[in-house]
Image 1 (cartoon, rainbow, N blue to C red):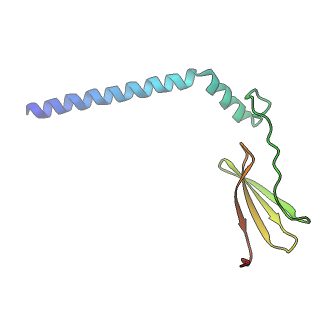
Image 2: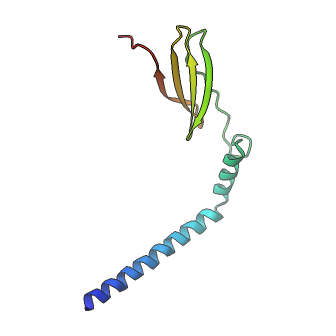
Image 3: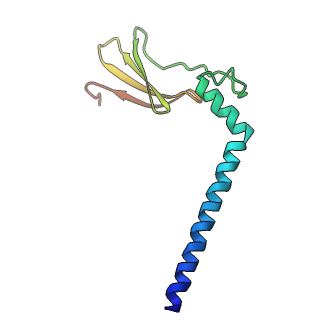
Amino acid sequence: MQILKALVVIMGVLIIAGFAVLGVELYKRMTDPTRAATQAASQSGDGERAGTGRDPVDVTLDVPAGSRIGDAQVIGNRILFKVTLPQGLDRLYVVDPRNGAVTATISAGKATP
């Protein structure tokens, strides 16, 4: 019975300590001025001009001449571009808008050996 009481007390102390750590971390995040400025810039949708200090990124997609860029969709924190090639095949480009890097290219059609 003594061991059970000790375990209950220890678990109670751990639960209280866990809530204390969560409370302190929430307070730090809510009062951090740089985090508030970053969130305000990302919510306005204009991070480059909202004072984040980042320069706009110039991205050039490596597509053949005569290609047409079709739909662009935002998926999570990536942008998906549909490009129709001159041969009539479609290619998808996944771009990271933070740095302009093409993270994936997906081609539709027959693979060439």
